[in-house]
Image (cartoon, rainbow, N blue to C red; front, side):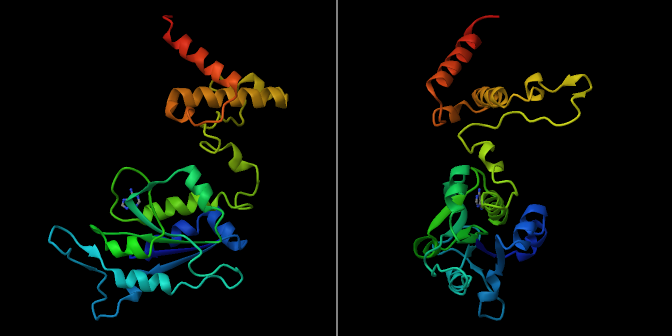
Length: 253
Ligand code: ADE
């Protein structure tokens, strides 16, 4: 996958990209990440990227021309057969659709993603209307710019690309991947400060272990994120199990 990030702050990305798993994915040519400075596509002496809003008001708005030109200058990897116009151009903005594991999965099938980091008070509306094909927010809060949001999207998407995590099975049990939070994980030592690893995990009985993990994932989701249970893929016995949890909770102890 080719990922192009358009930003006014290109200096914030190199350390992020050269962290363990992403760098390995780049070395193995599973992903390429190109950082473009939007300012390089200005033509005036002062390299102006923003201007005051028409109609008045506080703050500055990112001008459309450098952003359009920066996107139009992106060259898809010639090894890929996709054409310009066939890949998502995503504007990171608090007004976008709320990012989720499902959206990460949706994006992970593309050969090419373009991420535009917004800044200041906003981006000229014509970028949304005529350039961006998607808008993503990473949460209901406002950041100074879209750079952290772009990193979140890159990391969540990249780890879903086959081969990036090493073991193909690893993302399957992720929290959110199946609509549930992940079950508890343990490693050595078997006993630490008198806190023991649950017996079942030492049993070697893979059926029992899988059952226990599924049950723990359901209990954890029910306790922490009951809102997720409505959409989770549960069988009738599991739905019954949740009813039992609810009744037990309602009963005085
Ligand atoms: N830019 C500023 N705030 C943001 C958010 N919450 N998500 C994505 N991009 C942003």
